[in-house]
Image (tube, rainbow, N blue to C red; front, side, top):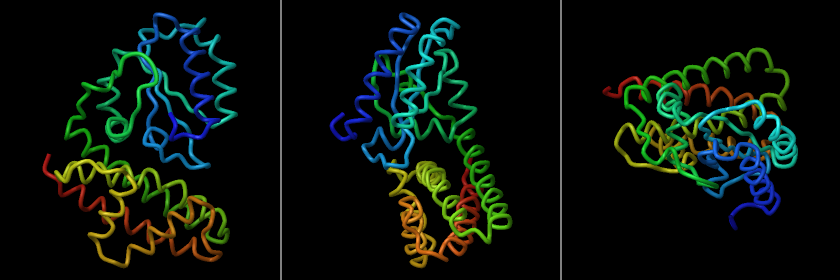
Length: 240
């Protein structure tokens, strides 16, 4: 994992070792997903893994508790614990998230349980609409309640970058435009709405890097609300 920072690589190796010791033969696989899996981890990013198990037992969970807490404190490692027989159901219930797992994942140990997973088109369209609507609602509420706090609004903008990007990647796949990285997908989708969106995405990147200019957060948030609305209108037009 030469494309990851040394501390992240070390934390992942230690977490894999501890998880194997904790769950033994019940452990099916450990999958890294998201920005870390594509080598695009930022200092503010979580390190996301999915631990797939045959069964989840008390003793194993308690053995892993301290190593998991250490990994979280060290590199913000966040683990999901999923049973093997829950994989298909999870992919349907959380289609947007697992579509992203399908696009951006790296097997750290064992068997890749997502290699044969298919995301039902109808489920992905439904979930995409839900995600974009939820983003719109969250952003409007934040603008109303935090409008006098520029730093807080910048934080909100930074937090919605990842879901907006993965929504754009799902939208393009559903339109038959092929897989893209989430960041490239959002740039492509935004550009299709007009050149005026390029500086908005630049400010979004600045917000993620905590470099957004003072006073720019409010307008950025309003533009992101409009972008989510435009993307949802496009998603609602998709054939099932």
